[in-house]
Image 1: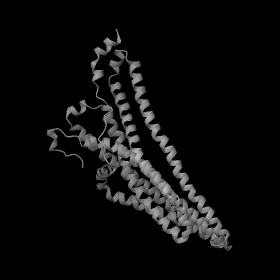
Image 2 (image 1 turned 45 degrees about the horizontal axis):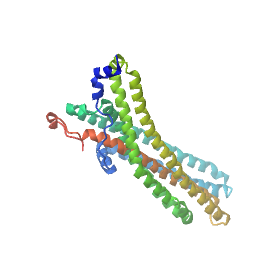
Image 3 (image 1 turned 90 degrees about the vertical axis):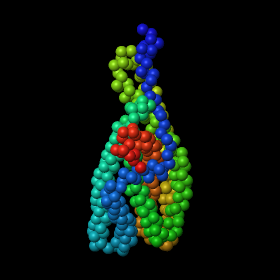
Image 4 (image 1 turned 120 degrees about the horizontal axis):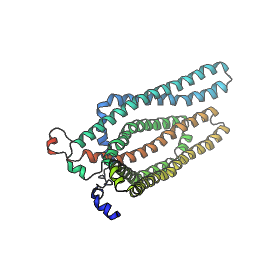
Length: 357
């Protein structure tokens, strides 16, 4: 039997819905606003999570000052009787910092799973009430990807993003205030690389979304073909189409590979570049601060404490860059999730349920 006859004998293959349909473009603000709706039932949990993060941050900010005191007043003035109390104070600061961080993680995980559950139920319930014609135009594997994978990406930006964003901004403001109170000259040197960091973040924000959207579409296309072929495996074997379907799947998998590598290549250049910009701040502080120590303008302990604060300044800046990456991924996923939730329901279901706002 020829391939032409086989293909003609199995017309359903050529009538499969296109799994690569695109979601309507939406702004980051719209995605964030709509996902925020799912956080409302968990306000207390969100507040507790942020409170734990702030307590952890507060105890983390204590140890540079304690280290400065140990170097200048305990070691510098040869007061061995103070070593044990100061080490206990340092240990206590670290224990409390990590204890609050552990509690934060427990609350965060519970919060995250509750929101995923609520959003996933809403998406599935909405799918159940859509007209049959909606499914004629879409691949089951694509819809499955939206319910399983895209919902996860969307909720992360609000839960992790809210916590990391708020705490990182507070940490940056607090550390800058401490550094300017400690040594205004070194503090001014510290912020020299900030224009580079801000420029890099702006460039990434403006260019990343299209890459994440292409990756999500490629993932859906591959999953759609996989589900379609698993459901139709008997027909594929009956018409000896294994090699043909293998090449189709390889092409879809290759599209996903290329899309993912495109994101990774940009991140591989962007993230180290931002890290290098932060390292410039450390080099400048050591240069200027080292001269101040040698000239007797500041103590060695003050320089060491300042360097500790420097790390606590650039670490949340790095977190914000990671958050920016998360937001771009969530925006691409959110467009796909809310395309389902915005699809008009069957008339019989309109009175029983309204679309999520």
